[in-house]
Image: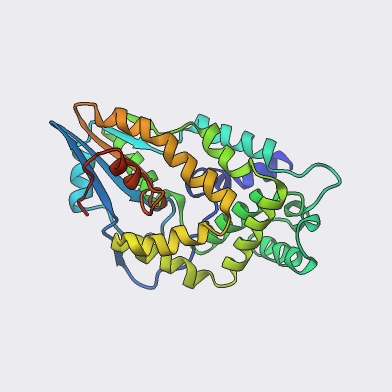
Length: 301
């Protein structure tokens, strides 16, 4: 991949960090007033809030007001999955370049049917990705590139996402920012799979692209309503189709976050943790893991 093409996909690489392979794309027809799910653990004077986020949103979704705005203003520390800085954005590009391309002589056609490959090339061209380049992407990277390109083409913007927005406010207020995991560990959950598993991930993405509006609006509406059961249905159930990916992308990361969150709970301060909504809900979610360890976790929105 040339450096010119690498720069062209800078937004794609950044979005990889934020939303992984779940596609969120479609033009909102009207304003959505969202009240995303949020949980609280209190320990003495300390308060630890956990906000389920969507990492890319259209501007029609309104969510930053009331309780969330007040909590951000009161926060002594804001915690993201990964705190993306310009240096980490460049590192994300390097990691993607090192782990996103097939070896010379290999191509996507070796991992899918001719019809599926043709669909990949058609969609890539439609989204401004040269077909001659996408066939050399590893399946995981092709999946993400197509997904995020679809989002951007529909007018959705990483700048409008919950994490990015709160990051900007926290930075402007000089609120300390930390993270739940390293960038390297997070990205490894995407690319560290056998090519056959990655191919199944890509094929699943192709199926979603064929009915993107229905799929994505179901996701966004469940998040906007703060409905845990609906979020499990729209966010978790589809992910479970790829068992190995689900294990690494969700379960193992959630488990690794628990000690970090426990350290935050023990700080005598107000902390806001912002992470993808899928990480908090369901039987494998952070909220259940914390409750299983004896924490009194209250849903406050």
